[in-house]
Length: 123
Image 1: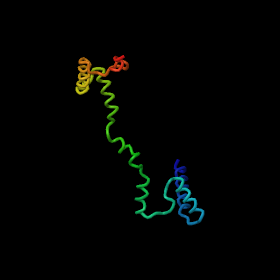
Image 2: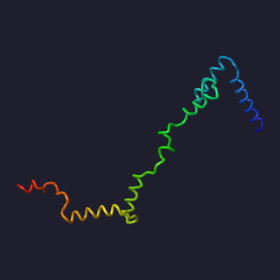
Image 3: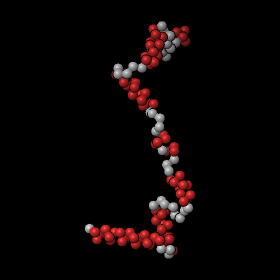
């Protein structure tokens, strides 16, 4: 087991040594490796890394931390209406609106059905 670890570490050390070699082939392979793994292709100054990190972040309009901030009002309202239908939730404002519609119907102040309006009664 120990020999396997030493072989692995030797292999990694050889790879690291090859990446530091200044031959044209080593430079091109290093650039290719960086392109494959989405790393900057050439060496950069530390202040340039700030730009890289800003551009690599998820845009705010796609970030769930920003887009999922507010509660889901429509879904919550539908859920509460289902609970109201079952009698588990009381919405006084909705009760008031339904009572006003009911009283309006009792007084005869609703729109006539199609074909029952003033124009059809003239004939």
